[in-house]
Length: 381
Image (cartoon, rainbow, N blue to C red; front, side, top):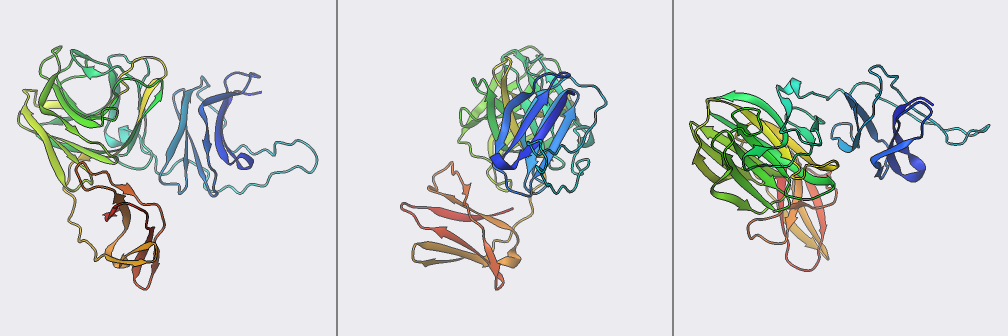
């Protein structure tokens, strides 16, 4: 009857479930969500504890992790941790055979401290912020509440470091989703601020998924109102979305990119701020109540470094009946095929489903031809 947290692969139901028993001999309770559908072996499971917050994750390769759910369970500091195996039928001859491998601490796990970053909840949000670092340096999944970063006072989760003088930072926003009780205009953002009080002067470059745009705002003085740069918004939003915040003296410049290579300036303006600022990721749900959250997948956060030039491979296009055939040299590197129905900006490229075949020194990708006009491109992975 021990209190516990359990992350279970359930083959007969083809899902992964996440459950807990909060008290001795108490009932079993479901996290929210409690299941993650689909089960294809091999599958990697990961259970992480941060204080009383327990987080479940899954992966198909042990490298790229998807968060399932998080929840608070009040358990002792020292726990028995390991593998739970049961046949769900307690009678003679009823058995379950499982092959486990790789049990142990997650080798790719990094903490925010390892990256030189700190998480601070500013303005006392009802839902405290939480972050995991699933893949590597600069890759951070954030779960946050908070009211907003607007007007004279802020309420949000800030993951930050200090920078002195000029800087140029970037991040790729892979996804931003509202959880629990959706509402308002949640934000995933780059921010530079004078201090860690709620009314600090700041500059913020915000991805706003509900509005389908990027906005650029600042508060010039402690406790002052929020002001818009000119222009303050850049319409259109498709993931992944790169954003970049640059400081040169008192001039702050905002940028956006669809691929991390070609950058378009949004706006710039002068804001007189101290030489040393707190710089990092601003995440807020824009609805400060229990259960209102935003989940953001940030990737490649760090100093901007111009991407090396890519030599485009020779792309060969042919047709066989109702199938379009794309082919390129396999020595050109690793690429994915993306498609769109229009080349009118803002262009939304999505990855085309399918698996390329390799042979004879080239990569071949088959695309069924459907009605309408479509455009395709190769994007380096």
